[in-house]
Length: 341
Ligand code: KG4
Ligand code: ZN
Image (tube, rainbow, N blue to C red; front, side, top):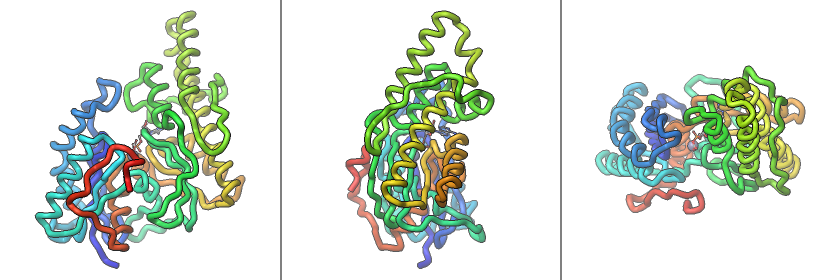
């Protein structure tokens, strides 16, 4: 079915708009918010204000790049949650207003489902292998870490999740302990490239089943550094690369162990990873390597579609559009995953 979908994402600190035509991505524009850097984390009130400033220019720029006018849009997809309530309200209110003005349907999108469906993003004429259903996805973002079986585009079953911190949070908190700015994940990734992943051994949780836990790793990292810095105040500075490589190794090891277990238990060999942490080069390499060893078909989104973006919202909107799954003006944003229906 033909359709032009405008996607809008505003769940955290990226304001983004994208245009999908008949399942192909035409434009994906992202305005990153720099205002949070000096605070060491996202400040919700500042995020909402920045979304208000960015949303119109970002939507205009996505439509311009796609070569489309507002009147060409067939439906508007927006992130309903999970995310920061004030931030979600900006995107959802804008989407609702535009849908009334243009008289086109609205589609509410689950941000986490959208991360997973980012593996279906492609531009026109782009040859790309797509996962077959059912596929297994390791979803690793700043707020969530889940193992999900995708039965079709819109049907997901969660078979494992973190009982405390998310993988992205573990990266960011360990980075903060080392004095690195927010978000620390990409910086750890970069510094780890120069370090020895076996220099230090940090605690891994030994949870039964398919759940994850990262708070023990964070605490062991904190205490280890506290003790070393007591002996040598320049310890962190002098061993940053090895610290980054070792902590990254511990996080990847915890993630891939459960992924292997889930693949074995479900018998699924179509494997995807998605979410901001799937941009991590160590995790990408580890999953590709496992794919070769275990005979998996591996699907990983391009780095620009791994972290928050509206292209994933628009492609999810497109799949819902094909099913006629529209949403009313009365649907309100929700902050938590378990509040989504
Ligand atoms: O999916 P995402 O953009 O936002 C949420 O939905 O949470 O994920 C953001 C998370 C942050 O914790 C960030 O540090 C992490 O993804 N991240 C990375 C990398 N790029 C982003 N973590 C490790 N290595 C990276 N290259
Ligand atoms: Zn996200």
